[in-house]
Each structure stands twice: as structure tokens, then as C-alpha cells.
Length: 343
Image (cartoon, rainbow, N blue to C red; front, side, top):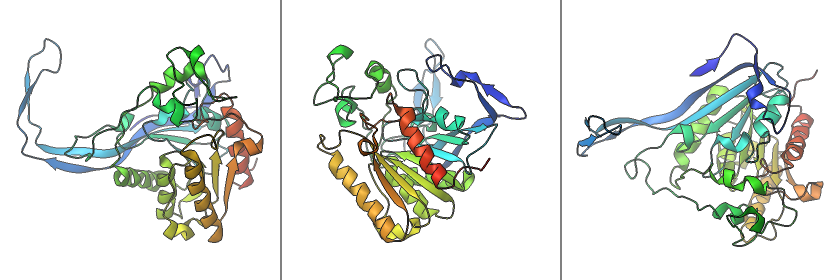
């Protein structure tokens, strides 16, 4: 674990010149890995590897015990804490915790937004992503990794229309009124990492391990993490105080929806959903799950941003030019649920 302790840290490096905000004062920051398991691999031939160009070859025996399926978590604790509980941020598929950091065009992301409002923020790289590390395929990860082309998220995340991506930003066909920072799209695609489709159980186990270590807490999760967020809360309903689902691509177990009746939930959807071939069904699934929570006696609110007067948002609303406006809607909801400390 790495950390800074014993003094108030003024973290001016978190304030980018493009935002020109006041430095963020922290009482502590650090990181840790959580979850994972040990796996034995055998029957593989010994290899000779040159680790450094021009170096001396070394014999590497791939047989033995490996640490795999852990998750990386970085935390920031504000000097003036106002959130009643820590706020956990879980990213979507093919991405990492960078999702919530600086936006592709250099503005502050949601990590900073909620830090400035006094939340202790725990931002993670899930199993198989970024600083969590990878494992061998097919020995441990059972499917091959999925990679995305540069143009894939442009349409699938409702940033542009059809095959509208072009290397020249001026030639891209954006959704009308799109709030996504087109000039930063290339930077956004640099955030993409390989993803696997067979690691859901390991990912959920690591998220539950984080809850056991950090919570009680509030969880804010995006896209692929929809299923993880709801299922983790169903597994630990006594430790999760609220759920914020940002365009969840999956939901929890409908047969255990009563486990969520004591956890207020907010589902947020952006713009251009009706113009897409997949998103109407994805949204309908989320809305139906929210109906199930309410039927069980719980609280689940579904917000379509255009109906709330917030327009032009893509699937990556935490990066859109109006990301602060969307975050303010979430902050107001959290305050309304009594999840911030009284002055």
C-alpha cells in the first residue's frame, strides 16, 4: 500500500490549467490491491527470455503459483469531509478508473468534482484492467480478450451517428447537440484496454472484497459495472447505503431484488437513446429492474437527462462538456437522501 499520511496535502496537481480551480486539500491518499486468488500452472516448457535489449538471457520457468484476479483501488480523503460515507467509483467495460479522472479534453472529471464536495473517493481498476494486472490466457482467463477499434465507441457510446468517425475531427458526424468533447476523442480512445467476457465472477468477488474493506459506502458505477454494482449490493445490503447507476448495461438478480429495498437507487440515462439500435432495450431492462425494487418496497428513481433539462449527453456523460451539470444532479440526489453530513 502506498499513501501520504500525517499532514494535510494540497493537491494542486489535480486541478488542471484548463479548469483553473482551487487546489484540493487532502488529509490522506493512497492505494491498495484487494481480492484475487492463487492459481497453479504446470506442464509448460521452460523459456529463455531476454528482458532488456542487449541483455543476458535468463531461463524462466512458467510453472508454479500465480497471484491473479486482484483489483486496484486508489483513494483520496478530503481534509473537510462532508460525505456521510465513502464514495466508490466503478468503471465500465474496456476502461479503467481513468473514466472518472481528467476528461479527454483536459477538464476535471467526476473524481475531482465529488472530492471538492467533501466525499472520500475510492476509484478502482477492476479485475483484468490497468493496474489490477492481467493473467494468462487460456490458462486462467478462459476467453480471448476483446479489443475495440478507434471507431467502435464513437457509434456504440452514442457520440456520433453510423460510421461517422473520421481521423479528422472536423469530418466526424456527431449526434446533433452532442456534448462529448470531439476534440478529445482521440485521447479517449487511448484509455481503452483489453477486456474479457468470462471474468464476471472474479470481478464481482473483487468488488465485494472492496466493500468488505472500505464500506459502509455509496457506490457509483457505469455501464458494464451495472450488474456488479447491483449484485454486490445484494451480497452486502448492510454495507451499501446508496447506489448511483450511470447507464447500467446490466442489472442485479431479479430474484433477490428485495435485498435492495433498504438501499436508495438512482439510475441515470443520457440523450439519443431512441436513435440507437441497442440502447432502448438496455434502458428498458434497467427501468424494469428499478420497478422491481419499488415493488419490493424500496426506492429506485430513473432519470432521463433530457427530461430533466440536461441535453446532449453520450454514454460517457462523466466526460461530456456538461459533466459538472450531470454530477450536480447526482450530488443533489445524494444530499436529498441524507448522505452528506450536516454543517
